Image (cartoon, rainbow, N blue to C red; front, side, top):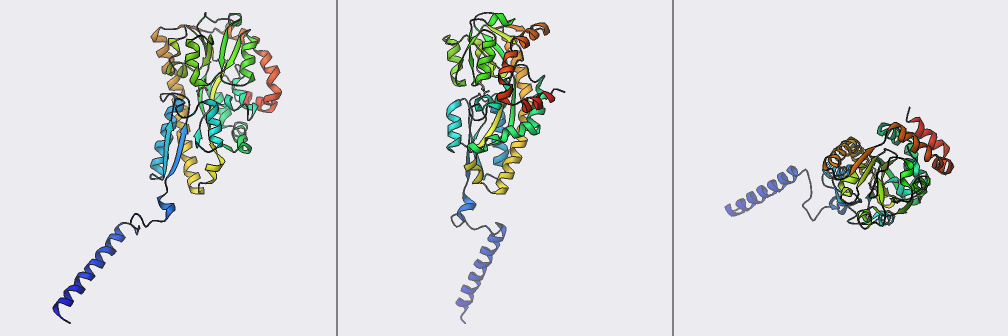
Length: 346
Ligand code: LMR
């Protein structure tokens, strides 16, 4: 064999060794373009919601994105759309069922068309505080309620609280049930809220969250009820003169996905999704109280609204005036569910 042949063989052997070493260093991965389709495919998750980013829901949605993207090493790509950018209240439920969006977190009141029992959080003065509501969320009854949407192609993944609601309006201070007479309030959805206002002698109009500021501004409605944080982040103090701190009902969310998307995931991916949701839920719960307290301070300091805090005696008068709501809805919501919720106050 000539010298040249030896050189050619040596160069070929060195080349082969280099290729082998490179493959070993890359963990045996094939070069891009030669990977099987499932290794390369990124799973897109759209998360649509109606509130501002600086809310417990807005922040927890971003936390979930961060967790799922990093823990899946980029296999999932989560896009969060706040402030009804993608869909409003009604549209987001339809979009979820059509798998045009994979995650939404509506206030459970807006699920009344699927299951009227979700209106339990609207029953006046039902939960004595946030802790009692969280206990209900975690209870067997609360979890069963969350899972009750499966026949509609919807899977409930978690309860996310916001907090207690308070009244605002543009006409007068609301200290007693009689003060509500003749006023018109915006409601989220469902009969319980309409009947709550009826019991106070007021009218109501259901309206998507994204339309409320304008409706308050142009006086289509006189008032609304919401958490401190929603009032603050929507800047309702610009268009409302009075706030009554009442803690009379709640806003709680159900984080929902659809069965088509869920069943397209492998068991490992579902497990990771569930784990990240659990972590985001713990984060959201801590944030809910903190952000509502901050917003309350901000609303007080801004001095834009006259704020009245119900006394114990005022509260008793409201409890009494709103009693007919319980009589009308106890059966519709379910006596067992109501009992389970009341137990959480103990
Ligand atoms: C509302 O419609 O007032 C709330 O449910 C909005 C929200 O998602 O907090």
